[in-house]
Length: 270
Ligand code: KIV
Image (cartoon, rainbow, N blue to C red; front, top):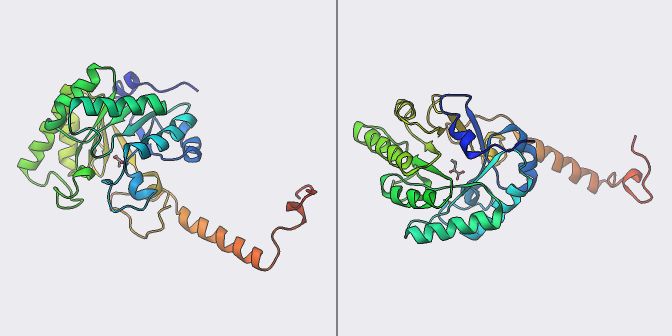
């Protein structure tokens, strides 16, 4: 299967919408790969996989372990890995070193980092050195405390204009696309119309050039009972898993598992 490339994603501006899902493990990468354009190894893995309260505790080592597992299995999708909090904000050199580790040690194709105007020179530094960068503006989860929580952004003219300036700065720095997260629909629509590079929306607008969701959220896999209001459940897998585990428990307890066909020498299953 042919690999999707960074220039192909760039060329999808105002074309067929770009399909993106987060992915953190090899088995999920095998299932998703042929159905999406981009697999994003998001630092949301801190909350989704490790049960953290925010993404702030995620380390570069964690991103690399999960990124490697996903990149190994992805034969079609472009694999993008999030730079975690604290791995790129200090200096251009620190950001480059983090990217070099990600690219060397995982086999991924691009990185994503959060920030707007203030990250412009860092993104430019990385892009000039051959690292494809996806930006991330609007609601930036790594700034949850300074933003006062996971709040929708762009609720007044000043906020809307600040997000637009962020998006333009990220584009001018050379990012090949950017996530617009948790932004009022009309604001995301306007930003998308002003950009030359594709926007990937989450809690944003159908006008974005692509959409991303956290895979466990859209599959109903979290089991926590909480779903962000912008998430559509395409399945309710936690219920299916719970039922399967309940049945397994019953069969172990009443000794109907393992039946003869699952014991050596194995009989042909009917
Ligand atoms: O970390 C993540 O999964 C993300 C997406 C939600 C865009 O940044």
